[in-house]
Length: 119
Length: 154
Image (tube, each protein chain N blue to C red):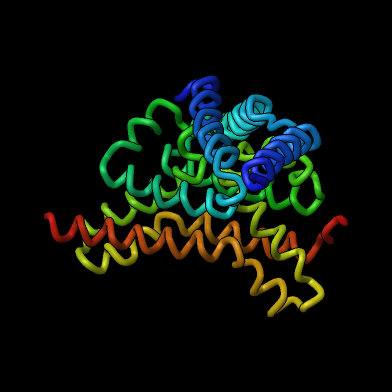
């Protein structure tokens, strides 16, 4: 099992990079760009094989940031492409992230219905 | 004769104006922002690790445990966004609350909640994707590209 302090350090470092990017590109890079950028770049790094070592060291520190979500997408696509070819390349990414995406949409919808925005 | 003097005056004015702007503008708080982002982002990931380790101890395999960890964090983030607490934290923690998967859930709930008055189907149901949509589009596209590269190179 990954020790808690490693999750803290790796996770904190990934967030720190995001903060530096945002502070130095203000106001061009918005939180939305950070979300999209982390998933896309995480998937690319994962596809090249460099993200799994970070997950091995940092555990949730690498899996919880959105780059870890990109990693799941990439690894899902690669594994499914291996076993099922083109059909796998199409379905693998979504299949491996289905739980997270569905949870976000369902919990998100319920929360938005139950609560009202503060002004 | 008059021109260079005018230009000099203009330059002096510009410099004065810049000094004034610098005085009024709040000083950028880069260091403080970075510390907040690191600590809060690190703590959110550490909570994730606590959940993962607990699930592994109870006999779950790593892949399932880490998937359920994401789902739990998404649930918590949706709840705390609804209660208005997540955005309070986000004001200080910046990327520390955006980069973790909780930031994704926060963006979904926050944008959906804003459009309640437009109805539950085309208000909440549509706006839920105003931030999640681009994220999923790019995520799916890149995953298919990576999958296809794997098919071709095999």
